[in-house]
Amino acid sequence: MEIPYTVEVRRDTGLNNGKIGIWLFLASEVMLFGALFASYILIRTGAPSWPRGATILNVPLATFNTIVLISSSVTMVMAWASLMRGRFGTFRLYMGTTILLGFVFLVVKYFEYSHKFHDGLLPSTNNFLAIYFTLTGLHMLHVLGGMAVNAYFWGPGAKLWKTNPEWFTNRVENSGLFWHFVDLVWIFLFPTLYLL
Amino acid sequence: MTSDHAAGIGDHAADIDRHVRVYITVFVALMALTIVTVGISYLHLPVPVAVTVALLVATIKGSLVACYFMHLISEKKLIYAVLVVTVLFFVVLLALPVLTVSNTFGIHDGIHQ
Image (cartoon, rainbow over all chains, first blue to last red; front, side, top):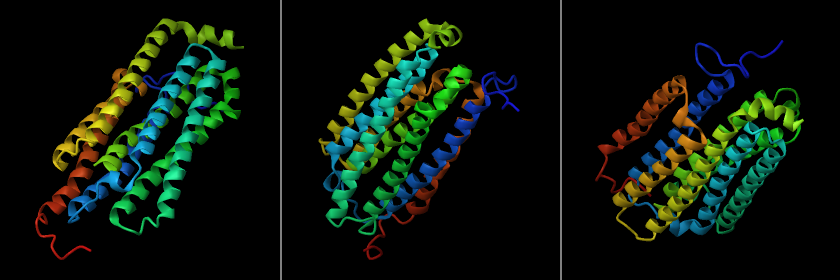
């Protein structure tokens, strides 16, 4: 049995079901990160003193990671645009670059984390580090999840392009929406944790 | 294989070309705003001003990503409806702890490490 409304739009919503599904999921993600941002505000405003992020964290590395993640958002949207143009080869190139950039982000984060651990700076050290590791750790899991989905569409999942290119294009658009959301979260995490 | 599929999907090639130009412009804007964000942090502004400016720039960057990369600028009404509800709950979520701590301002002495 075929899954309904994967390509054709529903008359009542004007959308295919996948699009509504991913946006509802992203709405729940907003609340997940929102709860942690609220915790950050609560902890920071309740603390007698709060360190400037730059005195503990590595701003140049995080700036580099910001550039990496923004670039990966562009390659992601270009991957989708390539499918819209019917250029599968170009899609593979852009999608591969997106995955690679996600990997670069994680490698940089690994060095940041290991440097902190080496210096004895752990989540249990103070409230600032606790919220830093929680927020960036959850964000890293999202990067990892997004990479897994993108890798699936780059590799085995790409078979769908041969049989149903429009459905495949919609799927890539939806995984792109998730990836852009991950970028969007980082855009707020970066100044909040590193610069303020 | 690719050219066959292109007949179906590639009909709006001119539209897509226009979109791609917008993506590149947004990318340049995001890079510039990232430099602005980091640059401002080196000015060592007072915390309330620094927070306001940093969140303002982050909001502009986030809006660019949402509007253009996530195509929210031309999305269907149902998606907007979902997001309006989300934003409403998000604001409440952020406001609640602020209200909770507002009556503890100035009486921190002796209650923290």
